[in-house]
Length: 128
Image (cartoon, rainbow, N blue to C red):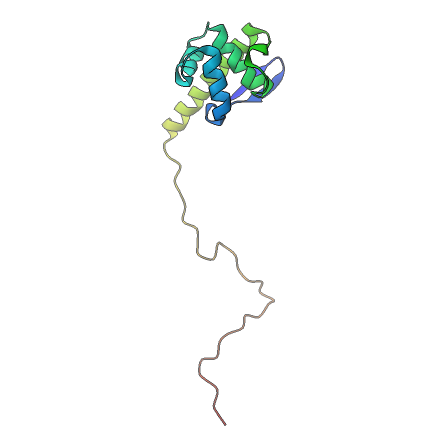
């Protein structure tokens, strides 16, 4: 998802959280990572929001509790990003699966017409 915060665009995916970051978040917020995600979606939890800001704005480095930013704009930007992602997923489901196309064995490449293609002899050469 893309989070637009104060004129900057930040890419964020829950799947990209490292184990060390997850452990710091769990320690900071006092709950499991999945519960943290739920609390973010509900809004209003400042510790959960601070951990998100730490990940998004500070790259998940340094102490989580030192992450300082304007809380209302980040919270609003995060909620907009969640809605946009949900709408994109819903649209993708409505369009159905993308059909796959078989690729020819030659991968579509053809030899240049100016280059002669050597052929194997059709019969063995005569022995002397």
